[in-house]
Length: 115
Image 1 (cartoon, rainbow, N blue to C red):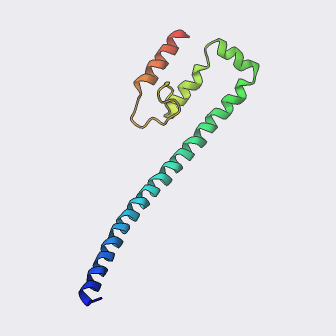
Image 2 (cartoon, one colour; image 1 turned 90 degrees about the vertical axis):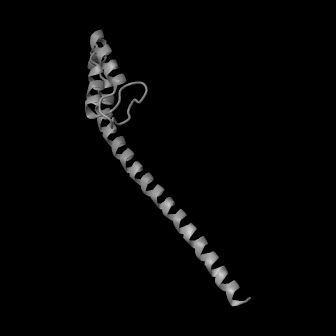
Image 3 (cartoon, rainbow, N blue to C red; image 1 turned 180 degrees about the vertical axis):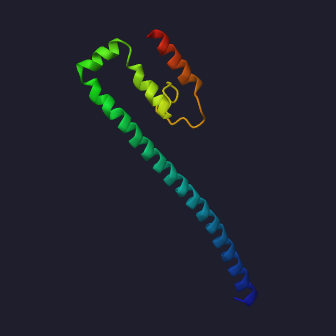
């Protein structure tokens, strides 16, 4: 191999390393996004569990059965909505990030009229 061929090959390898470095950077960004999303979802899951645990305990009592008959089961949904979660059938349990949801508000309005 002559010197020109060696330098040409080195330049090609440098280009390949640069492309791999860019790809690695992209993968690193994706990993960071996934870790952030995982952390957010873990926190949201813990928060939902703290809201659901007392509700599950209450559902096992007779008092809750009477409350359901009188329409008070919607009280928990109002609480979830006030905490920032969707209660509509389209996005139930997801965190509301863009303010009020018309579907949730419609559901709340409908359920308050039934009581």
